[in-house]
Image 1 (cartoon, rainbow, N blue to C red):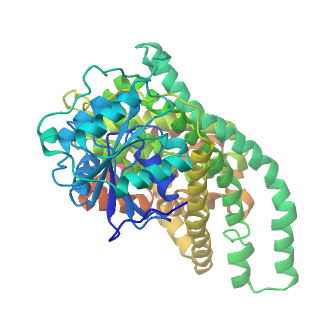
Image 2: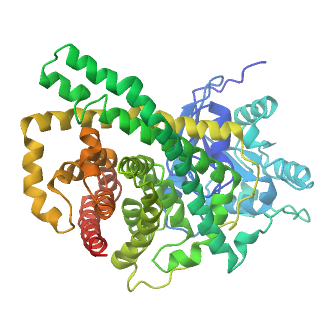
Length: 555
């Protein structure tokens, strides 16, 4: 196969409306950066650049353009097209004419080399071939019909050829909207029970709960079975070896002590990894099928009661995987609701590491049944928290106009799911676990120096407000650094947990998981919304967390 070469390494910017298939094309062209895009609206929130392996050009993936919206992602996408050497318009074959008219009106393509990629080839109506020919002749630019999700070799080569042959559209057709005459056949996504006014929100809420409850339960079963095996095969022999070698205490502590790498660190991995893996698969499947988009639209009426709308649900659900990614994804929210969305993420979106740590603590305390009421209360109090600090007195907002309220339902692509899960596991193994292992080492050192005992004594009076022992102070402090820092309660083979009542265990986990967003999330909020906004989010969350913990302790 002959390689297509483009002189001077131009930048090729993919521009289109949401759900048009830009990220799938980017993945197909470059083989990179698939893992934070999916089959739902607004899934790309940053511009991603990568060189095509067999083509001397850089391809840039942009967020979807939202018409009549004030989202930062729309401004970002429009700005990126202004400096592009080649603009590759990406439109769905199911709505080709409507999307072409919008893009030609919104984008300034005068004198700019352009080409068109028509996606959803497998779902497009029979008239799409005639429409492709029509636009190619009228605009005088290359137009290629492809299946972006499963980009075939021939289609990929045709796209590269279209990029090479890109040229400015005819000026007169940009001044006067180009229509396809009588070829107005479109195919809209089929309606489902999610669009029913009464049944839809309930069904969506059940799906939202199930997509996390099922994987978490399976993860609990896996960790419960593996824990005694790991203790017998790894932890107990390691502790015995340390004693047999007569290692000094300052060496044993960071390895096999209460906060050691081979004790607390192993417990962290054992309980967090299955959650990260299974929740990642569950979320990927829901997103790739298009169900997540339907779910968000169905819950829109409920979300408006707390000052949000369907657009804001996407980042909140993403937060159950990683709060930092969710804060970035909030760029697709409207300017008037973004802070409320980020506030709910920080308080109510239990990331995979937080869920894993919570599951570990409840399991070690012999009270795994507390997980379900914990997650339910987290959702309810999170909604009240958002309404309290962000929803009062706000006028009812109309959702920004969108091209469609529904995504196409389709079988998930195994390749896309693999890409997404691989990215999640990579982040967990290369970023999350090293950080927590570092926390183990630091905690072990502070314990040896007596610092943790001093912190516990200082916080003991405040902890008594919610009926917790002073020994819980260390885990509370570490949970502010990272949510899975609460696993410090597992120290010394869980003796602290086992000495606590069921109510105390629940209050401890609740307070540690809601008292503050982790430092990485707060840093991200500061970078995204400003340090004043991060500080306001922090103290408001502390007020809600402490107040709710006091109420729970009195029940």
